[in-house]
Figure 1 (cartoon, rainbow, N blue to C red):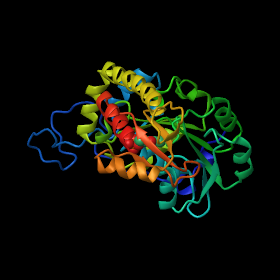
Figure 2 (cartoon, rainbow, N blue to C red):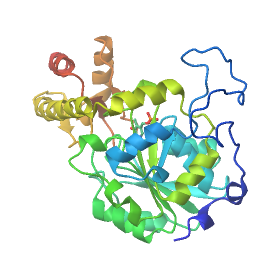
Figure 3 (cartoon, rainbow, N blue to C red):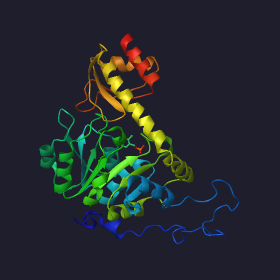
Length: 342
Ligand SMILES: *Cc1c(COP(=O)(O)O)cnc(C)c1O
């Protein structure tokens, strides 16, 4: 598959901005190249535009070569750049199964790229026939979210594989919640598919949403293109330094993830005993989608008692549903006690 031929012509032709530090990798004695303030402080220097140290650490942790890793200002930056690389505004389109994460459609719309929407089936899994019927020559990217937000489930792997194998375009799999699933996701097979992009993030399992760091993993051509499109210094020094530190303590992340998974199971069991609850959907993520008899009533009463959940009741296939993040054991107990009093 020729990825180059899928890129927009202006992107193929683009000469990227070259930063002052592009020609020089080591540590010099005197830096007079970037018009920085010379008086030392924590932040007087520009950050590494290639984020070499962070990428080397992620590379070792994930067993993915540095050339196949892109770092963005949140996954949202990667989503936007992927659309801008492959979709000619007002001509090409993206396809998304719904309900799913809102940013794919928002980024497409900002770029004036039409969105083709196909409903997931009633188990919130892919309807491959419906997708194939909707695909046409304008579709350049299919966005899949697995585990899916807001439904919480992993999408069927065989169905994803069949799409990657048959679709003559880019398949993005957003694995923001993969740490909470009993599945290794698609990174282990990344090198088999030149048209596959896997998105991950430090915002959820790693507990670093405030830092804004997202990742895209893909073949060399795709990563080189995203690097060409990004702002030169897109990941600031604070974020790079903090993530380097946190990557050395993956044990903390893993034990928090395990606790959240145990709490998820308990939460689902306890929700089954709440009279307002019709059903809780199975979850491979750090949240659950819950169908209530009267979602508006529950939402407003939780709000009054200072508990904020996400109202998804207006979203396709999510009528009557609220999305509830798994909190600390104390928070989950407070939620259940409050729900029982309604
Ligand atoms: C939370 C979330 C993200 C994370 O986005 P960041 O910009 O990295 O914080 C990505 N995808 C999905 C589906 C999410 O729910």
